[in-house]
Structures are given as structure tokens and as C-alpha cells.
Length: 92
Image (cartoon, rainbow, N blue to C red; front, side, top):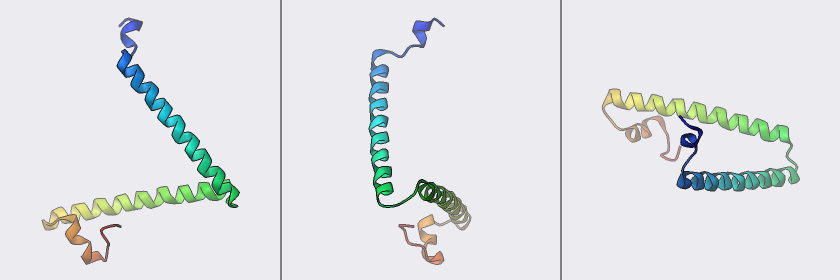
């Protein structure tokens, strides 16, 4: 293919520019949040540990959701119907 055929058309290029601008805004917002937390006395190490623990929590929660889903299929019920049996809130 020619180099010209690999280039995005005008609409795609504009969409990419918009997406880049959105990501820059998110980056600035996150930098602001980090600065706020640092000003409140948190250290970067604490923040990194917290983020790591959140990732671990999410991985464990995803595994639990997957297991509940498989159990629901085996029992022929909805996942929602299993929540009371395991003392889970729908917001969990």
C-alpha cells in the first residue's frame, strides 16, 4: 500500500485529535489529584501501594463475579438471585 493509503482520512484525523485532547485533559486532572493528595501529606509510595491494592481487589472481585456467574448457570438462576445466599449486596 502507498503511504497515502495508510494515512487516516480527515474525519478520522479529527477524531484522533479530539481523543488526544481528551487524554491530555484527563492527564492534567490526574496530575491535579496527585498534587492534592501530596499536599494532604500522602507520599507517592503510599499512592502507588493504594493503586496496587485496588488492582488486586478488582482482580479478585472479577474472579468472584465469574464464579458466581458459573454457579448461577449451573443452578439455572440469575447471578442476582445468588447474592442473598452469600450475604452480598447488589452494590458489591
